[in-house]
Length: 134
Ligand SMILES: [Zn+2]
Ligand SMILES: [Zn+2]
Image 1: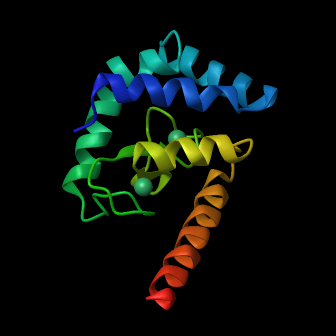
Image 2 (image 1 turned 90 degrees about the vertical axis):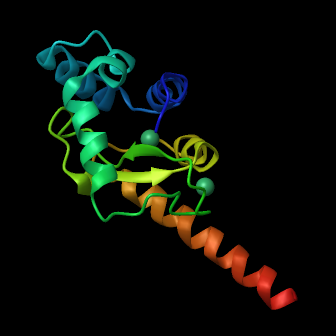
């Protein structure tokens, strides 16, 4: 279960890296949905609560896709459908890898999943090196 504390972290790390255009898109979207900001959305949107529960009840991975930590946050690959997210829009990441995704580069509204893929590739390569060294 994600806690409010984790959501706060998610909000902070998310928005710093957005381009102006993306930020404007997200702001308009939040306003249209009736939320003050992204954090407000994560903390008080019944739709988001429902989406998280729908995700947890789905057969989708319930652990960080990079390191398999069972404590995960749901990363939005896109904010396009904020408020009506498809499960495909979301990807589980532990806090550390979630932060990495957002720190790594400007996370695009349209292709945030590229950053995740790069991260997975890199971590798989590191894991392969470790097992090869054994
Ligand atoms: Zn992880
Ligand atoms: Zn995220």
